Length: 396
Image 1 (cartoon, one colour):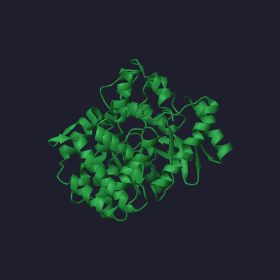
Image 2 (cartoon, one colour; image 1 turned 180 degrees about the vertical axis):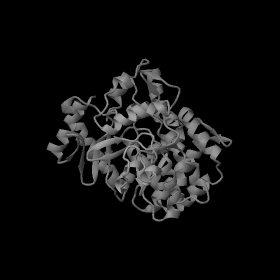
Image 3 (cartoon, rainbow, N blue to C red; image 1 turned 120 degrees about the horizontal axis):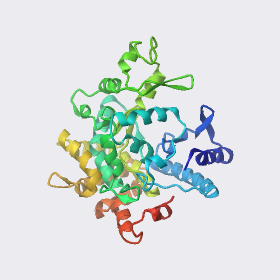
Image 4 (cartoon, rainbow, N blue to C red; image 1 turned 90 degrees about the vertical axis):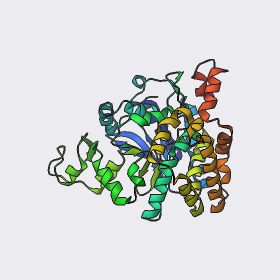
């Protein structure tokens, strides 16, 4: 899929369903409607960013509407949409770069700070959910739960076992990619678990993350590797004498990629892209864990004895072994069953009749079979060691 193909989808979203264009340098790079946007990731990944909503029913309906619109247009244009965590077939060299200047800057910089940055940009795909908080202390508790349990989401949603047509040895190749993208802006943020964690501490962390760019008059100005703190003092080499705006700060925050990212809400970033049922299951998992007081307290208690070494171990090992990863005398599968019990209780007590959205996750946790496990079974049997059937059988 190159940009010209994808532009045709954007044009029909506008003409048929009333979306408004988002442009850069005269090119449509996204569309927006009623608080939602559809934008392009570097390798043409199609990203719906939903509006802020109250219930999982509303969120799932929004996804259904998006998939209906995209599928209808795609069928006319001979385009399919696939939900997986890592491109199963194409090499980086075969994937067209989308026409956004910030991606051009990132593509040049990534190989200087890690070995997997280009994989992350061009070949990975995720389902994420954004959740807000009601106080600084509430943010801290939710942040800690999100970081500690992100590997459990990686295990449950693992759906990226192939690269360039062959199994990689990982259930979530995407999860493994994130372990060597750029240590300065990724990871599971040990400082969040320190007693003095606060909004200020996250701001200090973010100011120490090297910059990518400054956006001025429709142009991305190269500030790769430069210091935000120098920018605050008017000493940024890319823009001598200028100081940042709040818009610059908001842009800078989007260039930080930890397992959970703090803005005016928390972004849960661990899960692989997946089939329709998994799209609705992802927000259900996190809403159940941290949007109901008893569930949040139980989740906090579950992780309270875990050390930073435990959290690092899970982040590094779960992408390979998934639910079978040994942990504290049992396996990650045992932890996942406890996590899902907490989330189920949280959803039930919320009172919106949302519990059924976790059904697929219960099946995965009880069986120990992630989506990737099923893909590998098919690859070794009816698919005849080819990934090509995946594109037909798992298309939305």
